[in-house]
Image 1 (tube, rainbow, N blue to C red):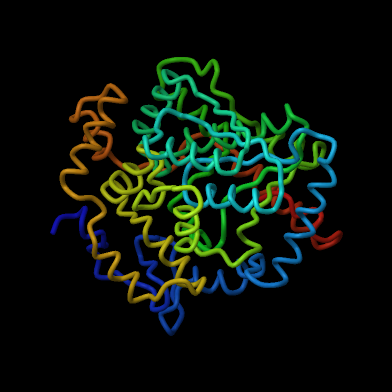
Image 2 (image 1 turned 60 degrees about the vertical axis):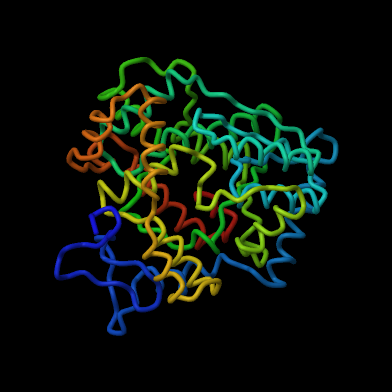
Length: 389
């Protein structure tokens, strides 16, 4: 069995949590005397406090929805919804339709949509009778940025897609005078994620630094969002808020898929984030091959601590290959063709030394300072200031 199908550290210090399935592929993981990892502890002591899959959640959500409807009563739309075509955002669209909300639905086409994703989006929009605005990103700029990230050798290769997705949501919210952005992000399926595996997707300074070093063309139309706008102008002056309703209901991904299939004919991708062909390649090949990260681990661990999956089932899932051979060959060929790379060039990027986003200019110091200020203000004035997420 090769490195790709057996994603484990060869070190004798290899350990796996006795409660979830996070392991020492996270270099920052720690274990207590019972073998339970810090991720499980953090979920129980901190994350769980923001999760309300109960009657209290229903009460809070109803109050949020009533306030949004009241604030947007005289407007064409009362909120914005980002729709990727994945399970979470599509299910949220169905629920928003049931709740009587009137969102402007934004889909950002960064050039990596699967055909199934496009079909699923159309089905959801038709069922809900929502208005959809598709933002199409200049492919030459996107391709240049995507290749720059591959050359950088950092872990989070999805930044070019993620940044423009959220940036576009903010821009259209401002243009349409709306304060509320609905997101399918949720604790039930994303409650655990190792910080060491990630880099901040919204750090425009980091994005520009990587592109300046490895890119070839100017980013003329690719719209970023600055630190001051993201952490001061938008939340404090424009009073914009991101709403994650799935944290206020008993959200189950399995039940969500059944609902989508029966209500509008939505079709399952068979894997998390299968709506993006690049994300599929990045999560299921690039990360495990280059860094030894299997993103199924935090996803499955999230389901375990949320009470939606048995650990034994998760361990069986992890024994399954991330790719079937023919599927992998087809996807690698597609990535190369789409990015105008040879197979040798792509292999060179994957096999080159690993790097951290922190090796490039970033706003970590400013962000950490803002978090300290937030902590102080929240303790003094309450959750009104808990807006920097």
